[in-house]
Length: 292
Image (cartoon, rainbow, N blue to C red):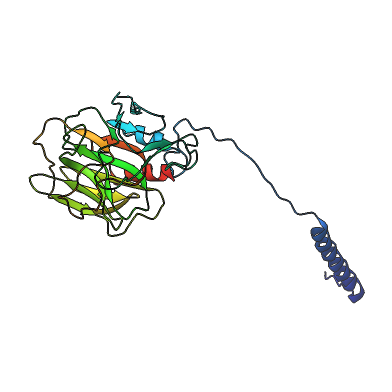
């Protein structure tokens, strides 16, 4: 048996199909578009999210157990050691520096109540040696020193390091300083002067973080968490004296490479810390990210 469809019936079916397609197209165009949005509250007790491990300098520093930590958020003396180890610093009575209470303008922008220390270079023939001085410490051979700074000076100066005496002109070692061109140095003295420095200048009026490490792996220096260089063969500092003092501000750098015009550092400093370990590049990077 065969079935024959007449041409008239076939045309009717085709017109019906075309009409149905047109209706579907018109319906799709007339339907309103859809969108969605949402908000969410993230609670994180670990002070971390995504690729940023810490939100504040304070959290980043304390996570690595500093030996001492001066945030310079207090007004006057003593300068509180925020490490919890009680190594409070003392302010030189004849200093020409002062602590500026400037919220939102310190090195760590997220710490809105933070302050920083402003150091003034009063020129030659003054006695402002070491604005902030720690209690006496045993000079470590494995360590990290770290400090934020901001300056436009063209006279250089000593920023942070170990001194043999509490006050006055002193023998210095394990320190960070700047030359007249704004290049930053890290120096130790294992029987002779050893220093490494940045090729770039950092006296551009913006905040920078300098980090220096010494360990059995050598001496390394970083600015803004970027490694300037490492010298594997230098693994010792000067161990000829039993007691030293971590000093922020002036001390003599006359005999060191790139010796600046001034021993004073004229500029702002913040978040000075010392660790009895060599921080890893990842830890240093976390400190810098937390401050930005």
